[in-house]
Length: 313
Image (cartoon, rainbow, N blue to C red; front, top):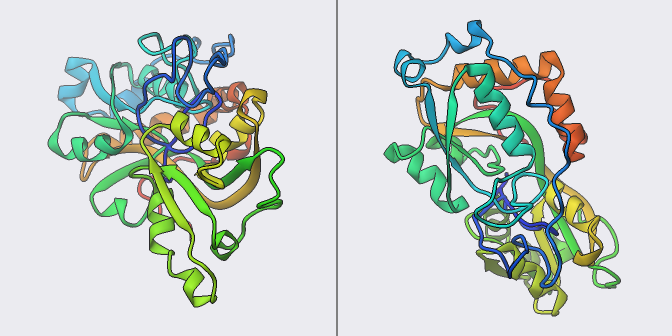
């Protein structure tokens, strides 16, 4: 998203974000050591989805002939995408369900390849992947080199260790973070925002905040619990989900900045119109709403998919 991106069973930062490795046997990235990954909901709204010929016809002829699309997928945290049964097993999550449902509408199979968050967008340009997912937020900077087809509205938020007195309410201005140490994910919109705005504290006559970047959500959460950072900046849905997990021991401080999130494509990709039509088909037939209800992300629903919308300001 923003990161855009994140990960974990007790999830967290963005991540949206990087593909991670488990913190230990039987855990999901971002899950505190000794805690088990959250089980995936058992309902399957994707099962009833069928190919819609008029939408599938929007695909390029070579894709229809091959019947396969290569998707670079950043997996790591619920509710977006994670491994409920551990790495190497089947991934689950909102992003997984939406991508699978879109593929069924288009009548194609997905060749899903796990990848770290920060490697996916460059790999689209090289042709390694046809499409990428990973809670990629639509930003003006990314739109210079990547095309997006939106499927949800997420964004940036903050979380602290449960019981902390450092921050007690929603962060509405980055000057509220002056003098604190903020943990976030590498290559995300969170890192970009914090770096770009680092001068706000000096302008306000306050001590600057410090940013620590982590490649794994589990490491970020551990740093928070051990007091090496004061606050986490990550995705709204990921941090909200994390705070609901008792083992995470975090408090969600609310939304800071909303961002559209979308499937990512190389600039000028002929796939965008087909994907937009497929997402809109899922919205129209109710599958989209059922997927979001399954993962508790209904507040992030969009009314219609768009190609390359301007960044929210």
